Length: 438
Image 1 (cartoon, rainbow, N blue to C red):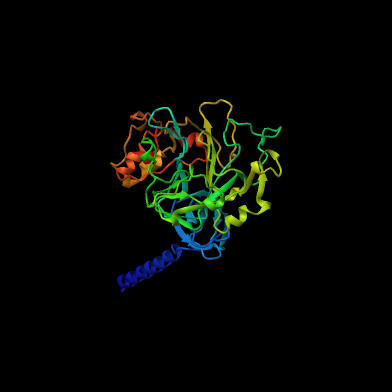
Image 2 (image 1 turned 120 degrees about the vertical axis):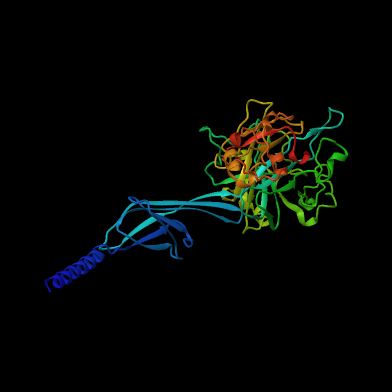
């Protein structure tokens, strides 16, 4: 009997101990709310919450109000947001952090993350060919075959609406620049706009560019120029776009012969002339060239509005120096070209558009080509075995610090990511021939 009683006592004690242990070990959770601020659309962001002690991590997605609630054990936490989004041809990078958030068992906690937005373009200037070439006699010069190549530098399709082009006066970097003040700064540096001298060229509508793909826009001579100058460029391609709008006043047939018949009229860019001359004469030597988009603006009306006109060098009312004010927020890329033949070059693009410059030797068929982002390009898994190197040691003696031959790699099926530091000194090199001639 005593033995039975003892066994029953032990069983009751064990049950009690088990019940007490279960109660003590019960996981206690508390609500931790993360609230995002800083931008208008706060929905759909992934917030990563990490326990500072155990390194355990959790992911939650914000609601339309920008909040997300985690039910986690008490402790100290860090919350981060790091996300990339694409819209209207732009790449938006969002980052934010909240550190050392203390969560106790008896009450919840709320922490705020202020998102910081960095805006860059999906689309960049891949190449500018403006320097002309020698004719077949090896002496005469030919300059009516200019183009710009735009490139989607991301893995998401880009759409550019109301694409526009501008150039800053003076036409050449070594020319007398009356826009510098006694403080050494450009008069429009803090004005929020960049003046496009003589007029603008633009495309009415939207141009779609697939991931890691390009679009060619002819600036002058949208024909097969190789028929008369063998080292020039053949633009007779149905995929190409071109500037052709004689009704604008830019009707010089030397610059604008009737485009090749294979180029559809739907690919013609229009223009607005506010200065003198019968051509939008992008310099063959050293231009300051930029690209913009204004998706919600009628660019014809905008450029014809006197309130949007600015005069280079303070020459008020002088049609020769009339410029269109292009809002800096519209500009998604620019390239400051200096002449290799001169030492006294001056910048015309402000540092927020292009912080550097790249040199050009003209009339040799050279172009300005963007450098490859070596680390980013090599990191793409799909590029394994497809990248071609020794570009800087190639036949044309061009120099790209990456050593990657971008055009040969593209032909080999690789996807190229180009440098985009907003500084032409680091981003571009002088290529020995336009890539369209390869």
